[in-house]
Structures are given as structure tokens and as C-alpha cells.
Length: 347
Image 1 (cartoon, rainbow, N blue to C red):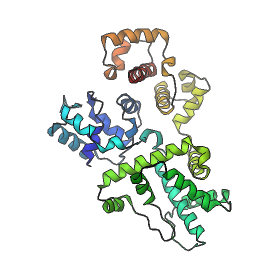
Image 2 (cartoon, rainbow, N blue to C red; image 1 turned 30 degrees about the horizontal axis):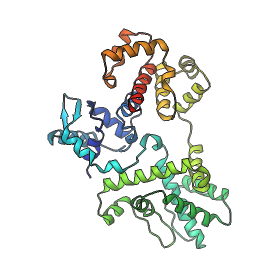
Image 3 (cartoon, helix red, strand yellow; image 1 turned 90 degrees about the vertical axis):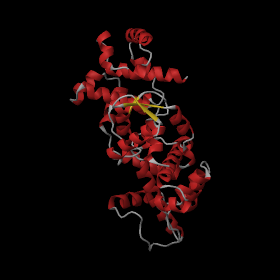
Image 4 (cartoon, rainbow, N blue to C red; image 1 turned 120 degrees about the vertical axis):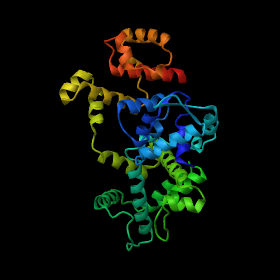
């Protein structure tokens, strides 16, 4: 698998898409325009997938896909999937993955590193061996491990912990189990890096990286669905969430849930209304089950429905065009109506 395969897969909707925005999404640029783009074109799962992706490599990949006939370039910024590209993306290995980048990017790698570290400590503990090199020399991380161990002093800790590991692995395929378990370090166990695992299994490193992300996200999803089934391993995840300082979006989200308006929050936090609006939109993408259409006034719903009749390609709407017709429309109402149309189309 090559980076071009992943980039091509991101155009799977078949819509005309601005490819420069895709670059920012893969890098993890957290702006309303990028996140909305991910939502509208069903690729939010790949947010922050390649934080170190260079613009040069991305642009050369787009050029390659256009030259190969997989993408059709309409102008300097817009491309569309061709029939050839569609057939190629339908056979992509990405179809088998369950990557949830936007949902878990804030904590997935940290959780995994801490789980590996705790697994190492418990492995050596089971053999009553305290003479080993820890896989993480960061003093802060070591302190967190010691705190976790002090909270879990049961005589059955070793058995219970590895039983949870076994049960979690049971929900994954053999290949998914292998890419995760291969990284474990413990008594008489030397873990592999992803590149070493790729070499051992005759896969390329990019495929193994995506497999790792997918497997880890499936594991996290299983933990969140079965909190009571995995109390020890879930507590690692919960402790990371408790340690994470509330970011500015979390603060806005809390105030919105308390019933404050965008204008009120803007004054309270001394931030621009546009910034609070951005927070509100990001919050809507993070929280499942929000009935977004309720935030659009009935009058604006009626006018937007009429606008839709004349402009059916709603994904390409521009706010600057729409407010010429309905000046009182807010930006979040505009975005929420687009998201509503998307969800209605999926049902």
C-alpha cells in the first residue's frame, strides 16, 4: 500500500472535492472548514491520520493520481474520482479497517503507550522480577504508572489484568490481535516496533500503521461499550481522560449544555462570537445523537428548503452566497442544516 492509495480512498464519495482541504484534514488542522469538510464527505475518521505528512508528498500524490487517471482535475484546487479510481478504491484495503481518527486522536496513542508500559510492569511482577529496563523513561509517565499500581493492589491483579487482555483480543481478528500483541514487552518477551512487524509479516509499513490504528480504535470502542467488563484496562483510559485538561472547546461545550447562548458565552469568555460558533460546530461533530435541526429556526429551515430546491448540491454551498438571501442566518445554522441534509440522505 502507498500513500496514494489512502489519499485516493478519501475521494470515495465521488463528489467534486477541494484537495487542499483534505491535506489539512489528514494533518489534523482543527478548523470549522476542515472538520465540516470531513463530515460532509464522510472522511472525518481520517482526521489527524498523518500529522507529519509533507505538503510536497501530498501534492505529488495528487499529481500522480491525476496522471494515472484515478482522479480528474477540474481546476487548480478541485478534483473528482474517475470510474477507474472508483474501482480501485472499492478494492482498497482501507475498506476492512475501522479507523476513528476524530473520535480518538486526542488520547489513542497515549493510552496505548501506557497500556504497554503497565503490561510490562505486571508481566515482570508476575515473575517477581524487579530487575528490568522500563520501556518508557519519562518520569511523568513512570509516576502515572506508579499511581495506577497503588490504586490496584488486588492479589489477583496479574490474573485479572491478563484475562481482560485475552477477552479484549477475542473481539479482534487474528491479524488485528497480532499487530497489537506483537508490541508487548515483558518477562522473556521482546516487543516489535511497527516497522519490525511489517518486515516480519511481509507487509509495507503504511499498511501495518493503518492496521495498528484500526485495531487500537476497535479495542477502545470495545472498552467504551463494555466498561464493566474491563474495569482494569478501562481505568487506564479513564485516568488519561481525567488528566487531560479541558481545552477551550470543552469549556464552551459545558456552557452550551447549561443553556447559555453563543452571544452570552462570547461575553463570558471574552472571545469572538465566530470562535464560540466554531466551538459549537466542533462539539456537534464530537457528540453523538445531537438533533442538529433543532438549532435551526423554523423560518430559516423553510428558507433553506426553498434554497435547496434551486441549489441541490448542498455540500458545495457557500455561506457568503446564502446570507445574501437570508441575512439573519447564523453560520452554525448554515452548517447544521448541511449536516441535517447529509444525515437525511443517509437514512
